[in-house]
Length: 305
Image (tube, rainbow, N blue to C red; front, side, top):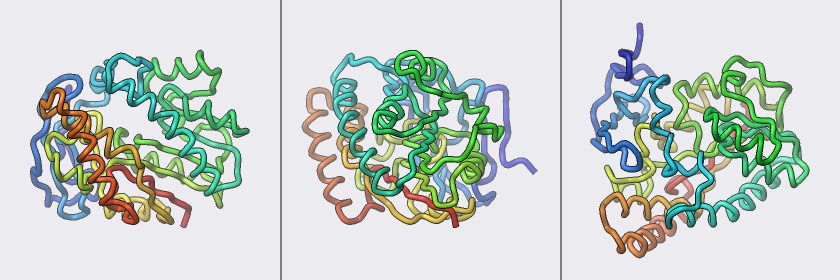
C-alpha cells in the first residue's frame, strides 16, 4: 500500500513516510519565505516523532525552488548582507569541519554527499584527502568541477550503488532533509562506509530554542526544499533502523545566529533583524552549551553497528 498520493506536481502523505503510522496531524502552517512565497503545512507523526512537509513538489518539480541567488549553498554570489555573512562564516566552518573529521578518523578517503559548489571537498583535498562528491544541482556540480577540478557525481550513481570503492569518512552537511528517500541514501552509505569508518550527518533541529521561538518563521524549516524535520529522537531511531549507531552529537556554533537573523528578516523586522537575530541566536547558542541535543543544528556522528 502506498503511503502517499502522487499527482502531476505534488506528493500528499496519508501515512508517516518514515514509519508508516496513520497517527499524523497538522502541526504548523508556514511558507517558502526565501523564493516562491508559497504556503506549506508541516505535519507531525505521533508514532516516530518525525515532522514532515506536506504536499511537497514532486521530484520533477522541485528544481525551480532552488533556482535563486537566495539559495546560498548552490550559489557563489556575495550580494547582500546575508550572503556576505554566509561566505565569511564558511571559511570558519571549513576549518571547524576539518578539525572534527581529523579528530574522528585517521582515514583519508572522503565522500561528501550534497557537496554544493565543492568548497569543503576542495578544502579537504588541500589537507591530503582523496575526495569524491555527489551533488544534485547541475550548476553547483559544474562549478565544483570547473572551478576546483573536483570529481563530482550526480546522485543517480549513489542511488544505484555504482560509486567506486569504500570510504573512511562520509559527510552530509545539511543534506538528508532534502532527499526524497532518506532510507535509500542511508542504506547506500552503509554499503560505502568502511567497517571502522565514520558518517557525519548535520541537520536542523526544530526542537531547539530558536526553532521553538520562531515557529512558522523559523528559517531552518526552509520549505519545500526541506522535506523532513528531524528531532534527536527521530534521527537516532532512523540511524538505528538503517544499521548505524549514533556515537556522538555536536552543535553547529554559527547556525543559531544565522538562522535567527534570517528568521527575523522573514518576520519583517527590517533594520532590527540584525540585532534581534544576534540576541536570539546568542540565547539559543547558550541554551545548547553542553547540551548538543538542544542545538539549532546538530552534527550526528554515526558508525556501523
